[in-house]
Length: 505
Image (cartoon, rainbow, N blue to C red; front, side):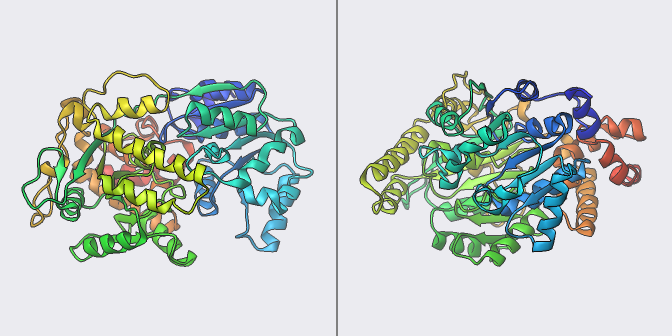
């Protein structure tokens, strides 16, 4: 099979996204590769398609145990032979999976970097690896925004197995990219940098004034109420509200819950079982909004997050790109609203005061840079892309600076339950199917099927796939399988059920 045939016959997609083909062809040719591609660009396909074609097993180094089961379930749902090795397994489960790995039963094996330091590393002995994919590769650099010391120990993997290494990240400056190459001992890798411009993300920012007078354009004086208005304007849709501190997370979640929003809090101070419960509620659409610190996000692979709101300014430009990147991963229109102030910068300065002086100053400089960047009020997408080393024209229609978006002003007063969200340019209108009764019916059918199978709703079909169904109205197998995201495995499991739902209207 060719990569194109795997893309269509296994995953049900008609064509590659930018950057995917170059990376896949490089690793199939045995070449190391660094892929810096924005969230939602389809990074997982760049190792899943080679896993099907190379033979042997592809080792995927993934940073969070909490995400691995979802990654494996998603791979299995399209027919890939995938498993994971981590500390959540019983000894018997672990032995069985290791034995299967050595027999060549798995195409994909996920493991955490910490596990590779210990027993998972030993488990790879005797396995025939064909590719090593390092996800969230910016974690290997001390100049990245999520440095993980265990990533530094991945350096010996290439030499040990003699296979190509694919490093993937959504947020790496050119400096961090160079560090990734060095730390992974990569040999003249192909470097693929995708565009950081995601036109489906509508970016807006408001300066928090705290003043008692009426806010000026581009400012707000009541952040909590503004957020409530924004969330209510997106009733029944999934979103994340990021806050700087645990205390503000709990306060904001309580505020929203007390006003009828299905919101839950998430932060690192909660015990592991409670954090898992909150994540599951969000993934299965039992909770619409998660109010969280930055502890929440990397472990979530939910493509239908329709909005990301920052109650407080992110700690750096890279962190902002990473966090807004969790919205609209399915390509459908999504809103990202940032509230910021100089007081947020001062809060970060206090948070890093105990660090070694050089590191502390580096973090302070990044927070100040974030403030200056967002306070420029020039094209948001262009400004962020430049920070990541990409030159692009102004977006024209996907930010407040270019298109005059004012999502707070457009949202209904707090006494009103529903309204439209944003002032979108005609070219950026969401599909008419997105708000239709048929789309809502398909979402309800999806949730029923997902609950029965104990999987997140998006593992049945993404919002984007449901929107296309509601728009194209397929009536038979051929037409249904022409919908992007309906591969052969998904057709067998769900095709007739959704055709029946479409016929009933």
